[in-house]
Length: 260
Ligand SMILES: [Zn+2]
Image (cartoon, rainbow, N blue to C red; front, side, top):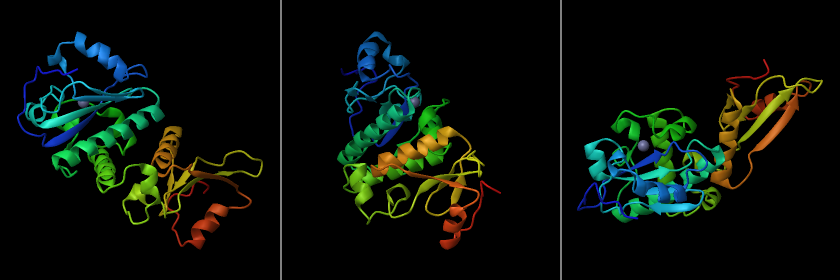
């Protein structure tokens, strides 16, 4: 497929936009392969769609695309859709990782360095919630999400090809790559085995109380995706507060104690 309706650019893209398709579990690359030819291109299309079934190049990167409702962005930025973005969270995160792999490959080819000028979010270019799920799982703001994208792209552009390899490279130093840090989650039960509070996450520096199950799911998924390992989870009880002993032994201030 090569949708050409937005015209030829005539030079390499100067930036990238990672979109979320707002689709369900069924909206994968094969779905878009059938669906896009039936649509008016002026209603919107991106260059690439990546889902659980692979990658669809809907338009060559030498073309412009109607992807961000912003004439400068449509003319200059290459665009990717993370498919199935409102479906299963772990599938969405896998698709997002695959998009980041693909974006990094092309940024390298075009000589682009990931930064605030080259990595753009749809919602800063026009009125939209896109990339809604990415923003939600990566800190909740345009800048937190952009920082995540930039860190992930830099990881790939510094010569690493998979997250597992990156995790084993102790020379790297960005937050998600630093597997030297001890990270785990824990909960504290009362003496009769009932939860005394919610799950807490120790990120290697401090303790963060998790306010809902989705946060725990996301932390576990990202840890797995970036290290290839399962995040450790401990259950302690009030009679033996090992979490407090651990934190005291490591001279870590408890900023948010889940158990008083
Ligand atoms: Zn978008």
